[in-house]
Amino acid sequence: MKLHERDISQRALIMDKKKAIASFLKHVEQLSRLPLITDAEMYQLYGEEVAAAVAEMDRVNQREQICLRCPSRCCPVCGCELYAPQFRQCPIYDFRPVLCRLHFCHRFNEAGRATVIELGDIFFESLTTAEQAGSDKVRLFESPPLATHAAGLIKVTAPLADAVRKGYLDPRQAKRQIVREAARYRTHQASTADTRKDP
Ligand code: SF4
Ligand code: SF4
Image (cartoon, rainbow, N blue to C red; front, side):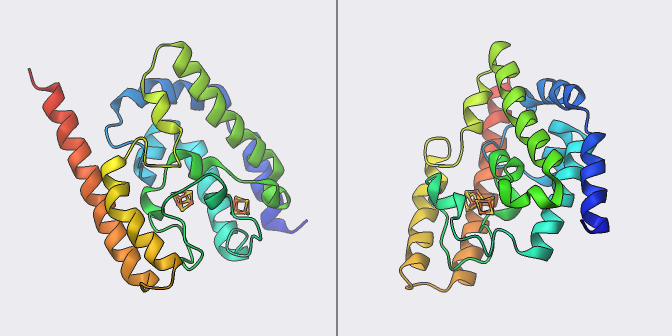
């Protein structure tokens, strides 16, 4: 095992699952832009240790290109409308849902098996605990696919991803448009939530 791999495994041991779940319960109702989420919101939702572990795994992924070289991508398997093999990375990478951020399959085991297991446990246990506490937000974490919870966004962006898949549209151009629509979707969601809060 290389030095950086041992470092990641050791850091996983200091991830406090109870603390992460407690943080989730405290902050989940404040999120108004789900199922899309940013790094900053992930940090707020699960706390520093989880954010650091995810960032570390993402760095390994970027360096080793684990997902990019994967022969059985999980994005189409889970029915994501925005996946196209021509994209080198998720087209909404900065806004990708929580499930996409916390899922690292067995191909990441060598990089940090303890972290893979711990992040999966934190995802499922935080949702189960929130659901038992009566949270309606839990269903928004069942994305991807995205159409059920972000219908307007997918109506506009799925045709772009489809055109990329069929070779009709340049992936970089499609990605720019998809990111713009995702940012617009988030702004709209936030303003709708603010309106709902008004007396
Ligand atoms: S998480 Fe695993 S299955 Fe999904 S794309 Fe990456 S390597 Fe492939
Ligand atoms: S949103 Fe998630 S499932 Fe869809 S392409 Fe991005 S990482 Fe893959």
